[in-house]
Amino acid sequence: MKENKFDIYELPSGHEARFLEKMAKRQSETEKHLKIKRPTLKKVLYWSISVAASVVAILFWTSQKPLTLQNVSETAYQSEQYYLPIIQENINIIKNHTENKKITEDALKQLEKMNADYLVIRNKIIKEGHNKQLLNAMVINFDTQIKFSDNVIAMIL
Image: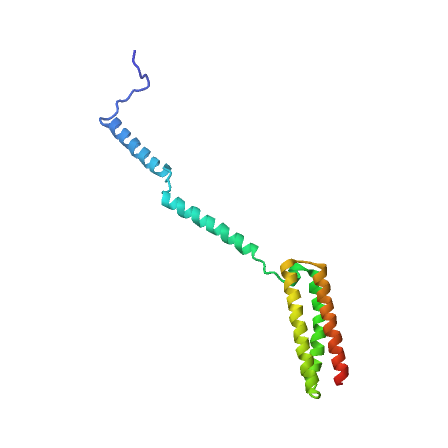
C-alpha cells in the first residue's frame, strides 16, 4: 500500500530543499524580531539613578514651602494686617511734621525700636508656630506703637 494516497504529482527536484531553506530564513528573521534586547548593567544603573534623582528632586521641591506668618498663624497674620496700616499711617504723619524736629526724631527712633521688637516676635511665631503668649506679645507691641504714636501726634499738632 502506498503511504501518501493524495500525492498524485511528482515534485520538481530540489523543491524540498528550497522549501526548507525558505522556512529556515523566515524563522531566523522572526527570531530576530522576537528577541528581547536585554539592557546592559550600565543602562540599568543609569536609569535607576535618574529615576531616584527625579523622585528626590520632586520630593524636595514639593516639601519646600516658605514659612510665612500666614502659613503658620492665621490669627497673627490677620492682626498684622489690621495694625500695621494704622501704625504706618501714624508714622507718616509724624515724619511729615516739620516742626518740633527733636520730638519727631526721638519718636521715630522709639518706634523703630518697637518695630524691631515686633520683628523678633514675628520671627519667633514663624519658627515656633501658633503660640498664645507670642500672639499676645505681638498685639501688645502693636497697641503700644499705636498709643505712643497717637500721643506724639497729639503733642506735635
